[in-house]
Image (cartoon, rainbow, N blue to C red; front, side, top):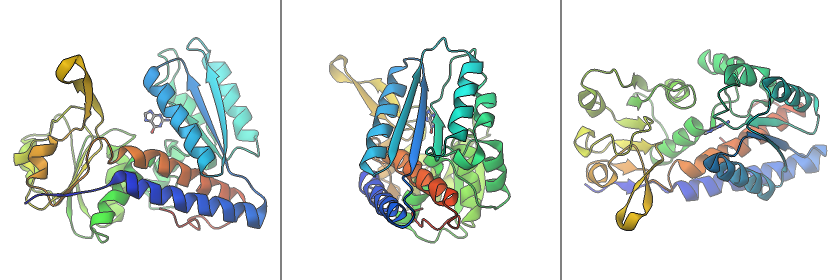
Length: 297
Ligand code: GUN
């Protein structure tokens, strides 16, 4: 079998087009222009690229992009004060503080300072708890994007055995919650899981989010399974160059799976698309429209 390649770029473009249409409708009907504030602390090159892309795509969707760039030496208090200002600003509907933060800043404290209604990352304990208890929540973007890609292959995931490899707060745990909500039987595997290959071999749906290049091998994959690769790892390539690979050994897995996401071009483009969708959602709720009315995700 050769797997169907899931085109994350195309699916993400579709989500962005729906967001842009929703933004135009919200503006027309309420006069509200959704605004997304992104806070970047320090000069990490990868974070700078993410933040630039976020800004560009926010504007392309017709929303207002607000960027705050602070030096790596900024105090925690100053950052918390900025978040307080953004919480009170009626023109800001979404707030994202780019992670990781410098070591002298407590990221838990920073995340908790964000108004849960503006927490478009879905990292605030209120949103984490709402998702876990089945209430409406702002949901982390990478798991949402991964779910949309899985559902682009099979719209009804009910009863599937899903294995999530990785237990981070950003991906693994919320991913498991989303799959439970889809009526999957969910296993969260991690670095201490015994006989990981055997656990993964049971899965109809594999979500790999371990952050280790080509860690998941082809002979771990059940024939016909859907494989969603969340990893983005830069590794040495020929000629002294580097290349991006996922957490899954792509060629091996593609020979066995039913469908698989490539890296790059799979989950990556979905994250910002879902961030835009969350910002529109937050703006709609702010406007007094029903939660979930956006219908993008
Ligand atoms: N750094 C890497 N991924 C993310 C993300 O999804 N949100 C934030 N805030 N920072 C990140």
